[in-house]
Length: 358
Image 1 (tube, rainbow, N blue to C red):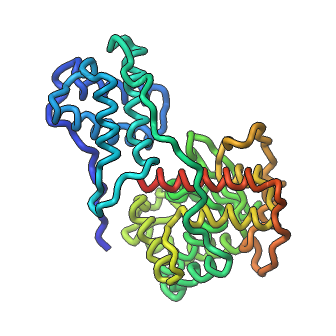
Image 2 (image 1 turned 90 degrees about the vertical axis):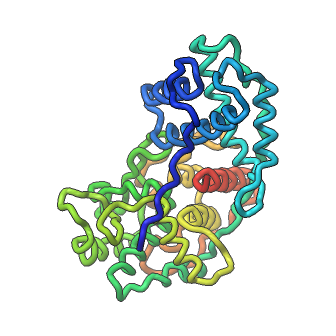
């Protein structure tokens, strides 16, 4: 399958020759972020979004940050509001927020470094984001139907089944599964180490026995024939023997979801939503789900209690419908007083999914 090349970040019309120009200041800002150990994905996202803003400014004859005023920024905000994508749909308010937030951070840094006299974005009001519940969540039977779409009589089908089972069991992010290394798996303890997740934080999370069974089958029967280099320790590799790209993994998972003909769309994040929802319905405390997902806190949670991996493993086994080799019924219905915390958790997942799509 031919790989789709990642769309490059937009570049400005002029080369960064003016030391006070937009492009030169952008490079200094990104260098500052790298020195402060910001995540590479965050740096690249800001490069992309600020590149679009700078291109918009240069089309209107604005070449230096000092020439940007609050009315200019408000005009750009209105431009984003009226912008239409190729399919004719407008940008969601969350997408508009994602494009404006780096602009505000950029001018805040410029003012702090005394590169401009004042911060024109200091009073820029960003769009209000309303909490939303996930658009699609799979039921246990629907999740099983998607898992069964992988043709396990084929080597690549065994790999796909192992990927789907891992996503379903752990709820890890797409980027976290791509970066998974052989040494991160601990079959004896039934855990997996997620390294440098969002916020550059490591976390140890459980993985179900059934998922481990498929991962072991893939490692024994499939991976040796796919991997190109003996020193490559990446767990899941593509047909070409390389680590997956985000777009490639998304297409792979989405194809299996579509093949199940459930009337629901989604890919990697769909399983993250589903894992959290089904464990909540099975009776798991929101705090345990937070640790599984790698969320430091939620807007409705005042105190976050760190839990041990052994206790988290017990909760995972007791509440996840695919944690064991045999099926079982859900433990209990969630209590009514947990609704607010549940809604906040699921809303944060939906925001995360939209950010990933952007």
